[in-house]
Length: 126
Image 1 (cartoon, rainbow, N blue to C red):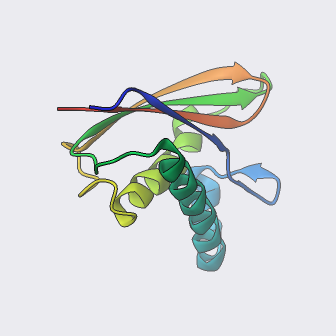
Image 2 (cartoon, rainbow, N blue to C red):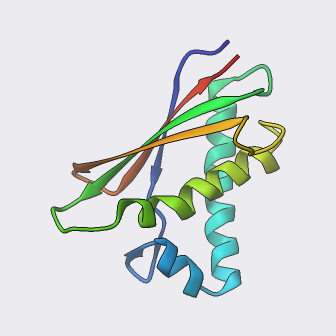
């Protein structure tokens, strides 16, 4: 069993807006593909740096969105597209067999912060 691992992801933007569910649905498929490729490369580099010896059977993800500024916003609307991309990347890269509810559990939190960063803490489950 591995200890908690932490991944910091700069929040994806499109035309200077954070990629929310509303933005994601309006973005051209080629732009969505590029955003996903960038996140996938970041996750792959991070995974290799962690020197994880085995694939995960099940994981718990504590996702904390550090949101710059005090302006009101819909946290789930902002978090969902990026968290889904992260799930897909873990599966596509072969780090976990499937992204179903029994293998990946996500607990989202939102905090005010200095930057738009998504902090992902991963804990392997038995």
